[in-house]
Length: 203
Image (cartoon, rainbow, N blue to C red; front, side, top):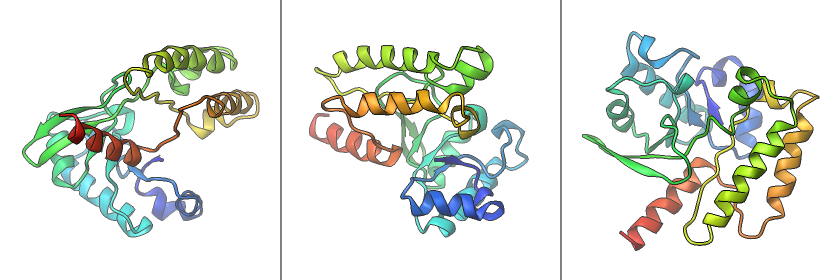
C-alpha cells in the first residue's frame, strides 16, 4: 500500500483496515504533494517514516514519491531515513540498485503501462483493456521467466479500478494469474528479501 503518512492520522479506520489485513505500508510522502515542492524534503521523509512506524509498529522499508517525483537528493535522503527500496524509477521487470552515501537502495519494478491512471484516466481506454493489456504483458514475462525470474507490477487505485464498471476486470486478472503455475503474489518487502538473497547466492 503506497500511502500518504497522514492517512494514518486523518483516516485511521482506512489505515487500520489495511494494517489489520497484513498489508505492507510503503511511504508515499506525508501529504499528496510533489517531492520537489516540499520546503523540507528530508524532514518530510523522516516525518512520514515516523508516523507509519508508530501506526503499524514497523519501520517502512519501501518508498514511492507522489507522482514518482524526486529531487537529485531524494535517494540519499531516503537511505538516510532507513528506506531500502524505491519504486519511483519506472523499470520493467527486474530490480536494480543505486549506490548512496547511506548504503544501497534497490529499485523495484513499477509500471505506467499496467497502471490504471495511465490506462483509464489519461488514455481513456474502455474498462476491458485492463484485462487485454495485463494478460498480454503476463504472457511475455511468464515465458521469459522460465529462464530468469521476472516481476510484473500492476498499479491500481481504488477510486479508479474499484468502481462498479471496472472492478470485474481487475478481479478477472487476479483469477487468471492465480491459476498459473509458478506465479507468486508478493509485496515490495518480500520481493526485496528475495532479491537480496538471490543476489548473494549468485553475485
